[in-house]
Image 1: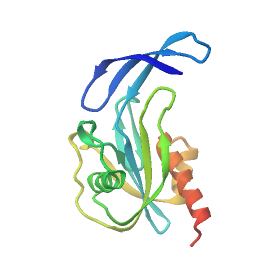
Image 2: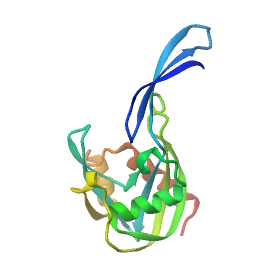
Image 3: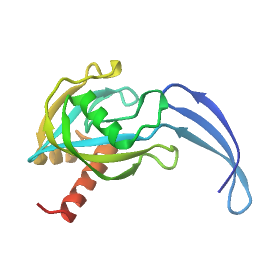
Image 4: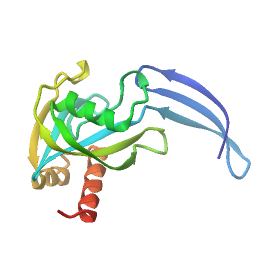
Length: 179
């Protein structure tokens, strides 16, 4: 598919929406709508058999959801993924990690968005004060045993696709790197 034209139809400090004129492989023309968002970092805080999650209200869903700490840089800035991971962990949970291991990349919704994310495993954790953004003021954080996390996924209590995919990356990492 070849991009023939592009125009931004909406933008704010967190995202933009563009409409591209495209030519398909068969020569036919059409349009493609794309949501552009900066890349994010997602962090899996792991201490022994415990995972640290955050719960917050997700406005588009109208629901509170448990998920791993994750986010983007303000103002659609491009930030080094490991720096962004450390910042998101500190901001949302107050935790600092002695070790951040890159587990892989996630594409959020490749049929409609350019956003990608890096997943990091955080270990060697120490506690501190969180530094949440204004939109995160009602955020809660808690530790969960891995078995409880898996039960919450099975019971539709954790439905965040990035968190579930990140957990799969953690399991693959542990399979390749047994203790």
